[in-house]
Length: 240
Figure 1 (cartoon, rainbow, N blue to C red):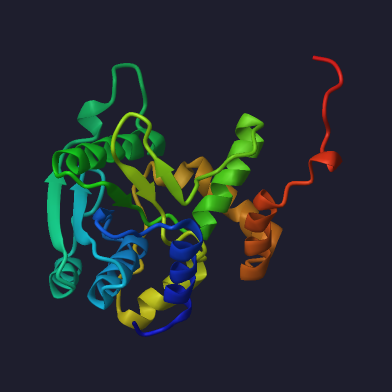
Figure 2 (cartoon, rainbow, N blue to C red; figure 1 turned 135 degrees about the horizontal axis):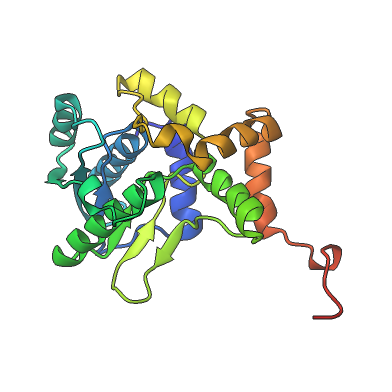
């Protein structure tokens, strides 16, 4: 595999968290954006290396509030030898009466469709394109909004289903992904619907930028702090 910063960081995450194993049947959540496209490129190349024996396919979920999957992206999946499946449904029609459309609802509906497809197709792992910035934004959102220290994890087995979520881009910052996407000619696409523009995640993205000054090293230190807890120097209530 041609070595570059992005693929080296993915290699490290795969090793550190045992994300790929012999016999895996992996379904890629293919949004059509830069993150999932680079993830697909990596997995296709790793599969050719036969470092592990696994099968690979992808699912794109199209909705009435997202742009259609480009022909260029479809061609890439074909070139990489990845079977690309496409499902279409209306997210707006699923909004319950009295409720408003938002990013959380859209992502929940997409995730449900992805899970159902994985179960029906006997996939044991779903590979998602969440990257380092997504992980840290979630960390800050949960701390500020929920008063809890938690975030996305690189490997999440479902309790009720024989499916595990993996996030191979866990160590890769968004800036590196954008540079890789531009170099390879991938569209640097992100969600551009009207609902995303006012999302809490977008606000937290700016706060993360200010906190780290955009530094990859600072972001990695922030992530590493989650595995270096000094409980003696954290407040503990003496009375409940």
